[in-house]
Image (cartoon, helix red, strand yellow):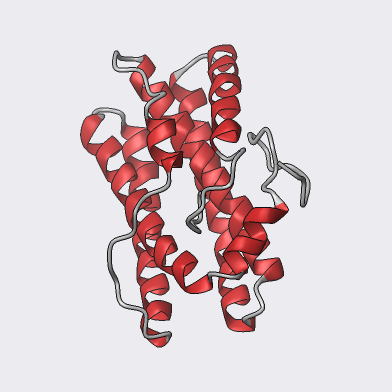
Length: 198
């Protein structure tokens, strides 16, 4: 992957220039996919809360994330409506499924992997929304993407805090190293269909 900016914390490789060009050339599709991403992110936070209801810090912190992701979902949908883009299904790129396949089935490893995978996805979202904010030719849309960057950075920070709350830091760092390599490999070849995580 060709570097376009400094690597975001936790990510092994920066996003390629090819992705930026693909996204800018397909902004309507990227915006629709962004809607799906925000909805899925809220769902991930809610699912973790339901799976681990006795972990008070997790429930408290992910409640705030789920609420914010749903607010972003609504904001993206408002922009879709302004651009007369109908909500509808989009085929998912292999990225999310590829990372989910790395989540181990047994506890407590399942919790650790779930938190780290979620954190990596949020970190990549932070990076790519920043690239769209810098490079998007639509000034209003660029401003919107820049406004979301801080939230995405905070979200991956929350997943990191939770991982290091419930697990020894050395164990977290070792597993993060493994998962971040998989994350960068999944994006090494540009997916032919434009997506936030293509």
